[in-house]
Image 1: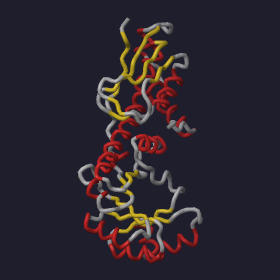
Image 2 (image 1 turned 45 degrees about the vertical axis):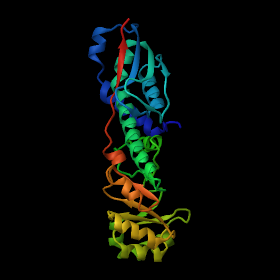
Image 3 (image 1 turned 180 degrees about the vertical axis):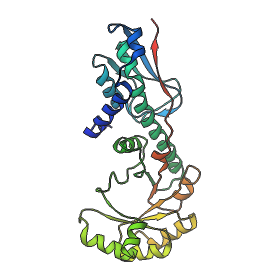
Image 4 (image 1 turned 135 degrees about the horizontal axis):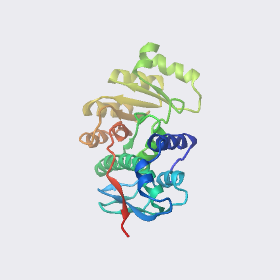
Length: 283
């Protein structure tokens, strides 16, 4: 599983470097000679799922191309508190200048992966068929990285952007006049290669969506009884996605209703950056 270092990600890295190092590093410049060498190690300070190693290597190379990094674990791996993730050798100055920016990426992505893995394990333990997927509620500019971190955590990806799938939401329905009319317009005008998903908030709208021929139906903010009824009514005619306010306390019960997908915005919009640090090893 390789990190998607796209032109967009490269621009994000450049912005992050400029943000932190744009006016130089007066502390490091005052204390260290350029040729001063050091050895450092990047450590997990809690149990976590690692994500972002290749990106971390890329960020280090942007500031200190002469630095030598030894990656000791793999993306998607679960590690314990105290595990060494990366060893770094080379210029002490370059190491210190890039430390915060590199760790920001590694901590954020590992946080998303760790959060996702927790949800995936909860659903897996129920034996339900449902798959945990993300949403577009990502950190601005981080969309491709956040979704990649979800994948590292074992989750699935929903739409990457507005151009990657038809998803008719409540406001689209309001603008079109009805669930039926919105689906029929999409069937006539959207690219034939894309499946059509529609969001419904009650069982009457579900029946309307099924009659109109939706491929995927998002069941928004329905309780467990409504979700179970929706599964029975649908009877395999469309994929069903449960969505809306789902958390670690409720995800198991939602999965057990028989839905195919459980979308969780919290994977990305509320994931906590995990505790990872870099230490210079004293000579």
